[in-house]
Length: 268
Image 1: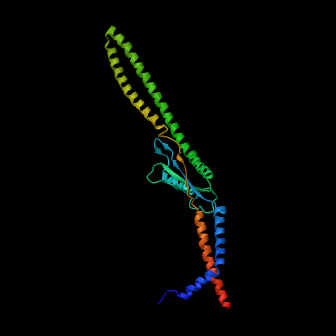
Image 2: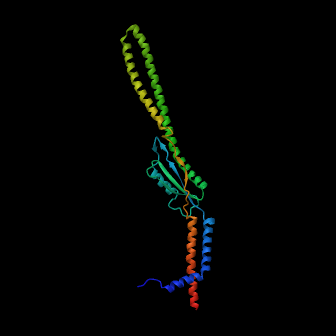
Image 3: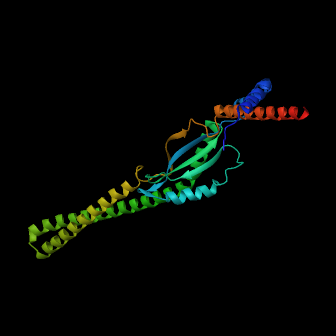
């Protein structure tokens, strides 16, 4: 079977297009004009921005699991139902791969200012929620530090008291050679050695306690870096809209030309 179009039919197609070329050009111009007007004056470019948030930590322990927090925020911000939401809105929350203790929050909007405001607003909400836990932890640690310092002070006073007693008893021992003084001095020396050992352990413990509340180990939720605004829009590009207008206008005008030619042929 010969599937090629006969030469006379090709001539008819070309003649029809040439006969209605003004109509075709006019319709194409109209479609392109409408598409250009829509692309440049009606359609608003939608941008995507994101911030990386480091979750609060207590002595390097993350206070809330990243994946669980991301799922909670996805539900809270209704990420799965982004249609017909007023701009700007939170479009996604994810836990970045190969990263620990961080989540990334995405937002869609018309401009950088509104996106920056929205993302920082959500960041502040998280900070308020996590800050209470961090402040409670720091308060508890400081209370333990104060108690430890008091214990060290009390033991140092007790040790100094034993040392003072030994000095008095040593002077008495030189005069009387009383064995009771020697025994008491020996007992106090043992107590002093034991107190020195406990005081050293408590001081080491105190150093460790102070380390736990240092800013690099215990902190509330914070932003890592600056908000990133993707320079590419997530809406169709203006160039693509104009090209679609051109193709649509061309197809429509050619079909209309053939339809008009068909009507003319029917009248004949």
